[in-house]
Image (cartoon, rainbow, N blue to C red; front, side, top):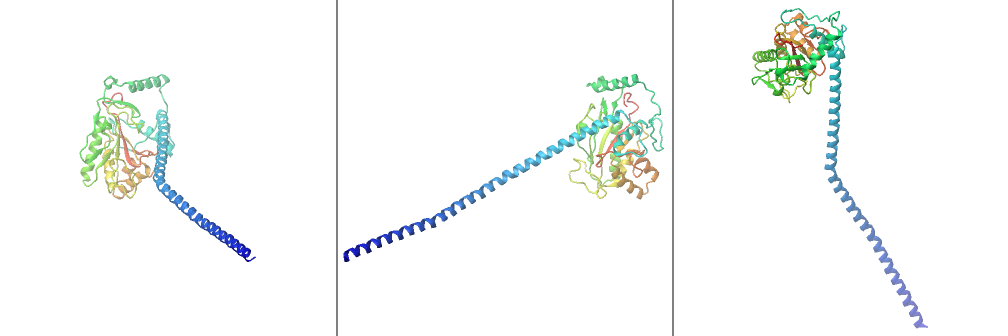
Length: 365
């Protein structure tokens, strides 16, 4: 009996020991599992951080590419806008209308067409303020219009300058013309010609432009270098970025600033009250205006209305007569009023100077 009791006790001890061992193993396994999970999570998070760091350059590259694409789209939109403006200008150039007393921005093109069609020839100097007035009656018939259009088309289709009809250098209109025997503009160190392959014009255009710039630099020796934009290509005709500049009588000239701006003279810079050197710019304008009564002299200048105001106020405060200023500037009379300088959009950073046909250019219009 006593032996049986010991057997029972021994079995109970064995069962208890086995249960304790299994419980301890289970606890150990449970304690190890969270550690393994934590370690796995750490590895996963570390991998995510590495992936994020590796993705950041790629994200930046994607952002840059998106920005470049947006900029290309904006440039395409600006190009489409320029084409729409050019088409509108062609329509205005072809059919100028009599403007009202006060013109809106959209009427500026017809204003300058009116101005250039009513300018008196150089053989009859007239120092009075320009009085634009279109003829009351158009005496030309349809036959005359057709012959004129055919003549202009013939000029534009001629690729060899020596085959152009008539005599002289400039043929046709500023926005539909050609050049023969063009004169190249060359300047000293005080001026920078941005695109020499577009620095061709008529002899009078080049000479008057060159003389006005040299006289200005001589009177203002401390002025910075002047930027000169496009005239025409060697044989005239259409050039990119311009509707006119086709017959050698247009020239873009930069402005003068109190301190030479960054990027100038390689590109034109917008003028403001704070940065424009009104004194030197006024001298340049007055030198160009002095050629009005000369053969092939200045016909019209395009400049933003607000920039006109900056120069006008400076000149008036420095003793220039109001009568002379009114002949030169539309400001403050209003856009579209008769004057040598006309407001035109996108001309807040340069002068667009157009010269008359010289008497030697028989087919210039």
